[in-house]
Amino acid sequence: MLKNWIGQLIIILAVSTVAALGINAARGGGVALIGDWPSRTSGGEGPVTPPSAQEGDPPFITLEDAVTKYQSSDVVFVDSRSPEDYALGHVTRAINIPFEYLDQSWDTVIDSLNRQLAYVVYCSGGECETSLYLGRHLQELGFEYIFVFYGGWSEWVDSRLPVTRPDAPEEGGGQ
Amino acid sequence: MKRLLSNDWLTLAFRMAFGAIFIYAALDKIQHPDQFARIIYNYHMVPGPLVNIMALVLPVSEFLAGICVVAGVLYRGARNYLLLMLVVFMVAITVNIIRGIDLECGCFTVSTRAKSAGLQLLIRDVVFAVPGLALLASRSRRWMIENAWLRS
Image (cartoon, rainbow over all chains, first blue to last red; front, side, top):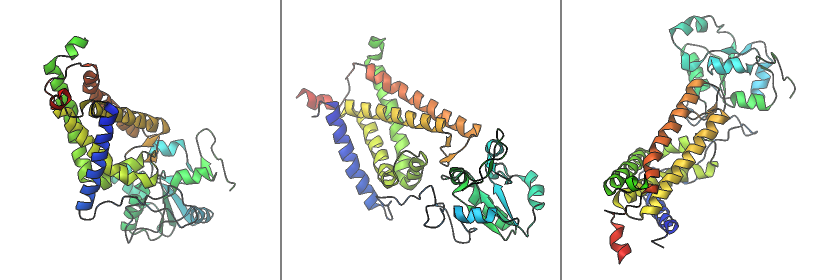
């Protein structure tokens, strides 16, 4: 077994597994062996929330809540992805405030937003957290009605909701 | 070429370099399994329940295999395993570049910044594979601890 490379590999993996479990057990507050990783879509059990969500964060909303808010004229959707991503497709009527590009030049844009309206912030879905960061930022600036739709662009598109793309200016709308 | 690659000193240098890369890469991951678990999760390729166990075992196996390559113990198994891991990483990165996933956040994007970050990772792994491939071609087995017991 020691001369066969597969046998050698089995020994290495077996020793590594035992050592890894030992190190994890010895470390105070080690990692759970079976991780509780969030689903990438909200499936009826409340909104998808990011692992880094904290108390005091803007409320997270489900796709259904997002659709309801979308139908209200007092709600503005904010896309926090890059201008490149936004240009290739976004929720119809959403405005773009790219969190990663946020600097002083964006102050005037943010200052021009009506603070009486509600804002639903979204990004790509998956583990993208710029929607949460932008939501926190807007909250810090005194915006009262901020919601984070963490399911984001991918959930919106999967549900065939209204989107605007350069090749088809407006599509979707049915549920 | 094979003769040059089988030079004892060159093989020793490649063993040191190849092993050291993985030993060094594993240290931070062993210290921060939670952060490494998130990286695995962001690749969208491993089922959720397996993410943490992979984040725990993979770095330790990298570390151990790195030591084995440097010391010349269970040498062929360790060398092939590390090469195989590099191939798996390269496939995973390529698939995610094609799928348009930003590996930093695990989110879908068309941003050129995310694509170039993925390409940089890919190029880095290709460079790391060079000493491993040289070791695969080398016939030198000098200065390996396992020589003592394999001879007996």
